[in-house]
Length: 344
Ligand SMILES: [Mg+2]
Image (tube, rainbow, N blue to C red; front, side, top):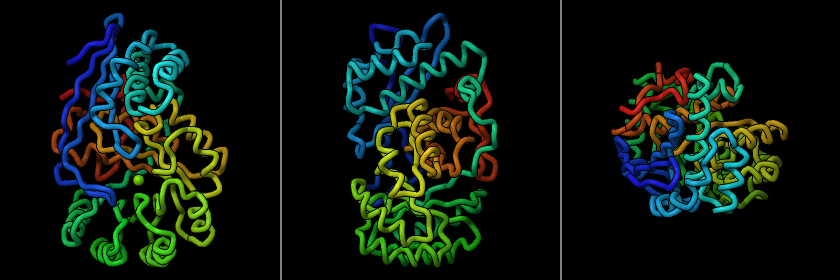
């Protein structure tokens, strides 16, 4: 446990996935997550930093910048002041650390008011869209087993990780294995333009609901070209890092995947969401591999979204937070005070 000069404490825990989690870029089973607590007047607010190397963050960067950023959080009611303080200390990046501090400020205010955060922010009370459950990239028999087990556990929407030379075989096998579920595909920026064009027919034949990030993050022109010929909606994930990216993505993508940890917190994600809506785009609320605390924060925004992909904590063997209610693959909006989850 480290302590900043002010009222912010944090602790990094190594969380473990129940099974190795593979995407096109890597396979890991250990995920260091840093849990932040802000305390003032006997009230605490909590946040989680879920760093992702793709966005330039690691456990090391989180632990290095937290002492520099933590004292930007002095008045938890002053969100503009917090953002200005964070920008003054570290103008560039470190979004998961900024997310954790913003989460702590928001929960402090919600607890003070005796409200769930979504009520504090005046967000939608609509039911949450059904969340997908991820089939991670592995050998084919393993992917079949993952899909079977997810469906047996009640999930009706699966997100299949692709981005290999054997993607057609994987998708056809999974469609055969679980014929009646909704399938989404995430290529994690791994396809070339010609490969993506070839895959469009395969996606269509497999009745895929949407495809996330087929091409490299900076290939907006390639995505725009692909979108013109695709019957399957194309959603940006890696291409969206900052709120300022959203407007430029509107011509190239049908939708965006918002993750609090890459955008810098719930308030920034809400800004991105409104920009995306204003530009006619669909909105997915997504996540990293993170505890039920980080997932809860995303769930508070999910009533505003078309698609949810909030299975990050379900993949963990040692989730340190409890309180999210999953029923047959459906996540209920947390209705407790604050984020609505408790330390186990
Ligand atoms: Mg993705």
